[in-house]
Image (cartoon, rainbow, N blue to C red):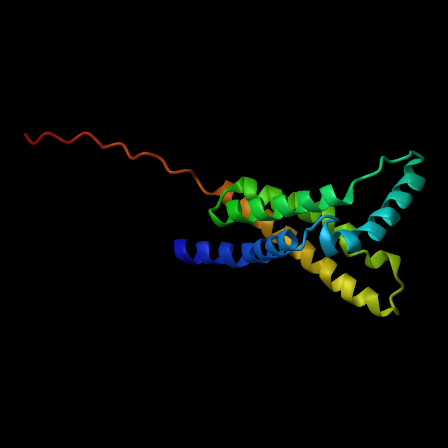
Length: 157
């Protein structure tokens, strides 16, 4: 069971490791293609949140946001492979923040072609969040290793 669990964590984390590696290689001076894709979506989310809360939100440097995503995905996935709960938490935080921003299906009508693609990707990220919650639950439900105490030997009479 130990090897199967490790292999499953490797396969699951490979999604995040490869994505972080690609974002790191394309980062450049301006944050790369990830920043270019994120700018309009972040502006739209900022306008929506500002209008709902009636407050002005500060400007967010998209390049720093992309760098944070790279760190969360890379470090979180590596820790997750080795079964550390903090890695699952980092990946969960990344998914919790990025999923509604990147996969904004709610800004499209159901008959538009982007809607179904974005909804599918959004639901895939929700499933990944569920897998991370399941991992945390399983990790917490297993008892920690306890040192076995040697029972005193019975004296033969």
